[in-house]
Length: 354
Image 1 (cartoon, rainbow, N blue to C red):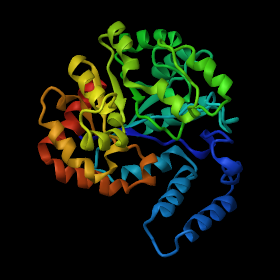
Image 2: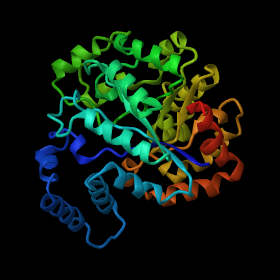
Image 3: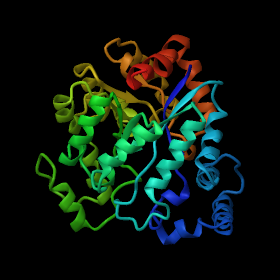
């Protein structure tokens, strides 16, 4: 049984109204608005049927399919029969980008009901420590709807070691629930509130941070750095944590051109995987670039880390960069049967506790 350990099915109604500039989210809430934006994007380069604008149109239309099941089915069709998928919702209420049209609880309820209908769906719950009663909400979704783990997205404005997350980690460790956390820099999805509010959030850091001269996107990287998981791994040694995206394309490029560069997130995550028994990573989004396939295969030669790497695609986020079908097939062919089985079957089972 094949596992894709990182996909999304959240819809346009789960995105804050000010997430895109110039009220585009509100415009895209209507079919007419979507058609207008799609036509504008396509007209920017009318001579290509496979350029970045076409891919963004595809991305926008996916979020408007009308249900998480329809979005899931779009992804599912690209994979072998009986494949299973870890579905990661998003709670964007506290990112400072305006109101979210749909209540987060409704997004989770729909996902939980979808998992009860389709055993191929493995539902996780995004945890934001700023949400009141988040632990009770997690328990409800685990006990009533069969959620199997949690998702973190620190660039939205919180540190993984936030004290309000510790009761969540205690519960997850006791219930054998794994954690998938976004762990790459320069995220397009980051805290959008004021710099004053950003300063308050960053003041919770374990180390002093100088915010002068840095954009909010750059400052959001402080929330996301892989070293932030060291205290959690120490305090919860049985908790399985996946640092998603294996450091990002930026640091894979840097590793190829300057392998000795300091603070390379690829190197840091690799070293942490060797150090900690229950620390994993996935290749979602980052490995959409075929130029990285050879480096991944070389990393797979190392038995200290090859059992901690998970296959994931980041559908449908990755649709802006590549085609889902080609991504899975090309990588599978390049790695070969044994290595691909390791990251798509054996390792995910260990991570999920199956």
